[in-house]
Length: 413
Length: 157
Image 1 (cartoon, chains in turn yellow, green):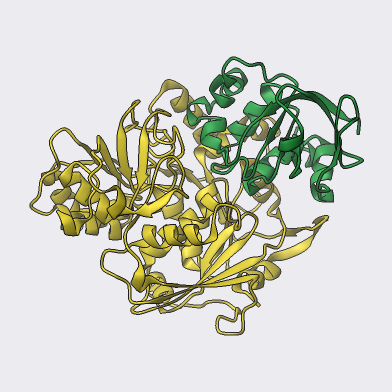
Image 2: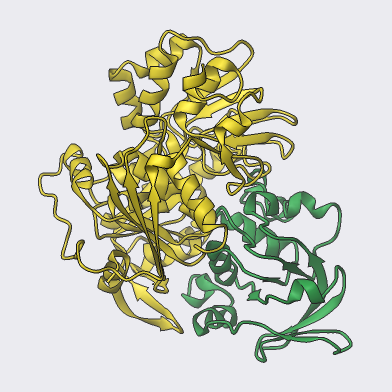
């Protein structure tokens, strides 16, 4: 039985009609912008979370608010939480990074969140699924959520991992292999049989972008790298629950990807599926480079960027923006000296938040501008003007491009 | 349920949420949200429209401001070859029928008047010359339409 199915089955509490079941979630994520759309209804009916110990409410999209309207929206959410006596994670970072740093996010849990990139938490072997706010209201107020069992596609990752490859390249290779529709309503299960194993931060990057293909969830079968992450979070036991990780798993499709053959990839405007080797678009002049987001703003990304920018200088006239994904990532990057290196090189460090991703905060693009970014979507208008171009690349390529002022692989600097 | 009658607004494949409803129209104000559908839809009125699109409709964000923008600007239903999972759920949660029909985009034209019969699982043009079946809606989602969306169905007024 697939790991996804084992988790799914263990959370079922009853029928919801048709092919749907009510499932009991273990962790419920609500970013402020999603909760705000239901604040009036919640306040008027005096409704409260049914199982507050399972809930995480995060101010990350308006962090801090950049307009009067957003300040007032956040204020409504803060007042509601005050009434509930519920602690808001205020400007601590992007909700998806806070989830995977949270002790409640462990292998075998069902995590539901009111944001599409909730799938990121599949990196800690949870069944993590994104929904709209109304579904999450059921999870918040009734401690249940309606779900249909997804079909599961298995992907085995093998071979040595080239130094130039990061999670972004691996997920782009997966998206290229599967195409834009195959994953809709389905879940992906990764088995990491690569030499040395895929870095935990890269696993988050990989799971993060499965939703770009409409995927319901993606998770890694838990292994020693998962255990290491849990141990680093300060958890003594590495209990994976009563799930079998080594039995024969049933999938609707199986794929094997040899990472040894991978080259750095880019998603070209204006579609995450418009994928080509970075080498094919190298040399394109850039107006901005952004390293950050729930896709790739983690310590692995900042370390890789700092290594490349050490002693170097951001190209004249280029807007180079780096935003750590969370307060923890920010602190660690401070301690390791990465933020100093990046700042000395001429990059601008933003506070932990979604930043310009989603065209929400500072760092938006104007018409005609071209940007290389480590984010997950390059749809028209995703980072500002619909007439701007966004190329999705890994953090090494982004850092090298900061120095060159054009798209480039670090090895070609 | 009475059939839904409306004028077709035709779209292509892979229309994502950032194009459907840019995040700058995220708001608690219904008039701002209504104005954001397709960034104003090039001035075309969306009142009473039935959107017909290709594959992978609504891929992207889970923002409910998107689906509220649809409803508040008067869209009655969405029909597509395939619909991205989160968009599909958001639509029914808000009481908006989202219908999967592989042949609709080829058989109906922009601004044509068509009718959706939810009970009979069919789409037809005004003359009755073209009748297309659509993929039956799961009873869970039919229940959401009948109750006027998820919040109403759960007694959250």
